Length: 151
Image (cartoon, rainbow, N blue to C red; front, side, top):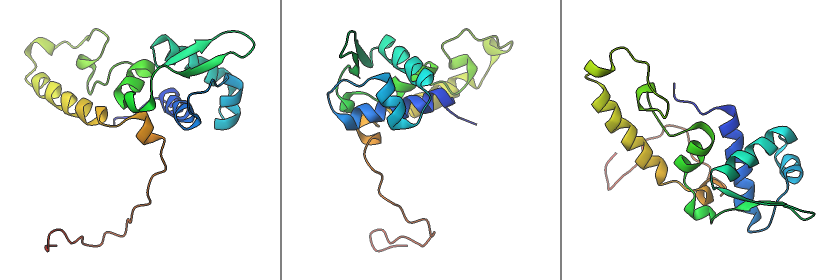
């Protein structure tokens, strides 16, 4: 199963608040209140996102964080990489050294590289700005859809 960690999921929630808030500075306390996330979790996320260049930190009395660039320029893989490491379908494609005993003779690795590239390309098309917009409700009644005069 492909699944993001809870911390990464929360990172998307926090970043979406920045995207909807605009260019102003946000504090960890304000974000924790707005997102209903624990303050220590929000603080940890803000530090990680700043360390990876997605946020800029401001010190002082009116300190806090703001997006390092526009929400239209921040993509899903960039967010995942900042919090979980690069998008990798299998351990041998990850950022850590693989301890696979069959890696040198594996016939599947080239295919996993191709699959991983396709997923990376698809995710790169989705920006933080898009994720921060309300989703349109979709019909899930499994009715046939008419496309160019055909079912």
